[in-house]
Image (cartoon, rainbow, N blue to C red; front, side, top):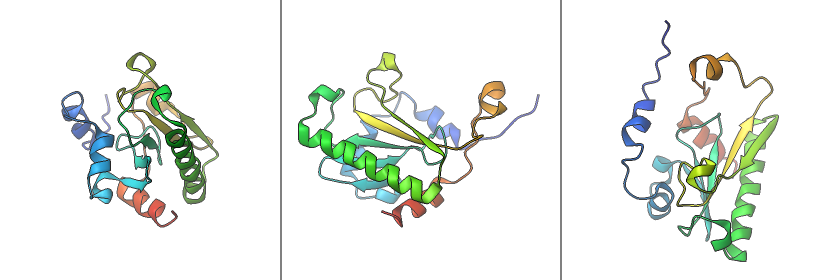
Length: 158
């Protein structure tokens, strides 16, 4: 058996289910945007890189208020959330030049939400041929760019 070493994943394994508080709420309160990979904040939303991405450029847009369902957002918050999704989609197009996107949300633990108490939308850039045998055969996803490099490129284009 061959091994593909991914030592950065241990951080995720060690904190999953043990971390106190909400990652989005912490990012909103923190002043360390680069450390948190927080790309953009508005009055009602934020855009943040996913530190455990499905693909290069995977980011999340979350509402400021700690709510778990769309029905709990007012019109202003909903508009801001979608406006940030639109802006980040445009920035990712410019910076990464993907062939397409998966944009969506999982509402509730049973729907696949990893962070089910705080509403957020995933934006995942996709490229022709970005799927290969690695996820199927070895349950391993290869992400080709560091978060620090990606963060810098995105920030320059906001």
